[in-house]
Length: 237
Ligand SMILES: O=C(CO)COP(=O)(O)O
Image 1: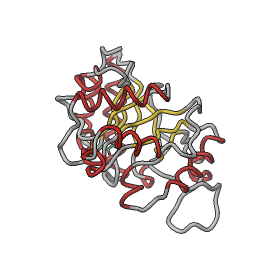
Image 2 (image 1 turned 120 degrees about the vertical axis):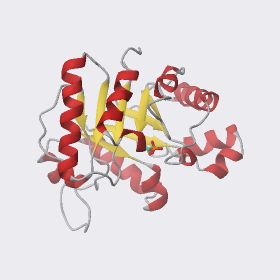
Image 3 (image 1 turned 180 degrees about the vertical axis):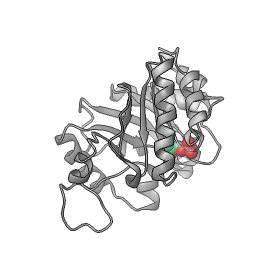
Image 4 (image 1 turned 60 degrees about the vertical axis):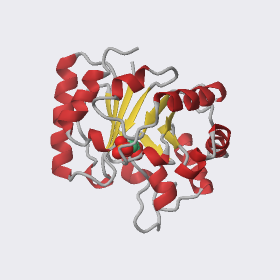
């Protein structure tokens, strides 16, 4: 069964997140859809939601600390209040827009690994690297694993080419196939694809060899569309 995840990024309010989750949860309750579903709302919208077993809330980001003086950040204490046990680490927007370094990402990974969190770890190359060819792309991607324990049992990977995120430009199926194959040869962990996944293409993408699911931004922000995405992928292995 595929893993299907929605990354809200900086979208939705507390009220609309609750509404969204009610809709998705009701769908899962009645549809016999056994996909493994994750939703990553904004930090201000997390709560103690009562959800189906296969729907889990994760956090988009947190600092590697229990608590302390890190203005603007949240840590373990704030996550524990809502029983959050899943975190997204290494998203390209944090790497490239918020300036998170490989070293900080590795520390974050280690901290949340030691706490037994499920970690969705994102990797992916910017356009200029893609244009330099497959070898350069793989070299860039594998550098993003430096300091990361790729044997961690609760690790899920997400390949998200930076040039495909929020641009409407999905990688071609053969790009996805080649990159996923190369990653899987080295790291045998569930591997999601992300980058302009849509209601219309999610099924075909999830059918590509070595694609275990999808991490979706824009196309997942309306509950009705996310439910269509879940419906379109429900019969896949
Ligand atoms: O960054 C993404 C998910 O983490 C992908 O975003 P889009 O689906 O908007 O391209």
